[in-house]
Image 1 (tube, rainbow, N blue to C red):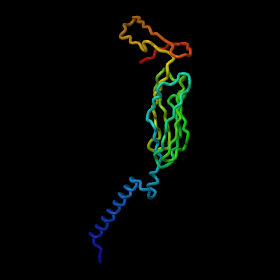
Image 2: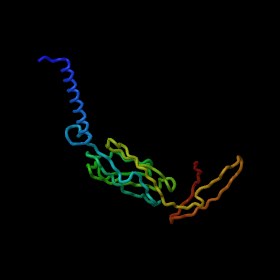
Image 3: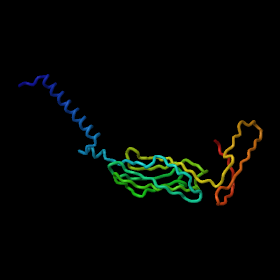
Image 4: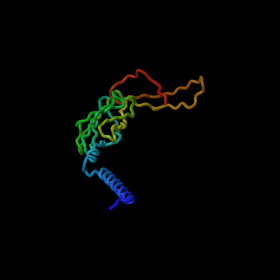
Length: 194
């Protein structure tokens, strides 16, 4: 039997068709995570999940460091390594993890600490960055809103001067009242731009 040109074309077409089917089936197997072969081994990775995506402290003491616990879970299929935890204000906000690495399907506790002496004002927005080996979320940034019990109350809490002509002097009065039992001393008053 002699091979003709049309036989060769059909044979090449069949080989190409089988190759495409094999590639499609392999891709589908990797996406389904069926656990067969080296492709699924590459898809096994850690996955970080926080109990909360942002944290509100509520009122905290103005005289001592406040501590909070936040659950960190590994929803992936490989150990989750927490490589670094850094606050946007290193003096006032920090964190440590109680278990590292975190096994697949397990949780650990992120111990969050806030030093009120280093928080500027009575309300502040900071963030905590958590660096891990999760390939999809290497850095998780969690906003932290801090509310410190004030030592004093101000009435009014801000001034509205409106439009002021050049050379004109405008005065406003604010009453400061001690709220807590601990005494304090006002050493300086600064005007903050809006």
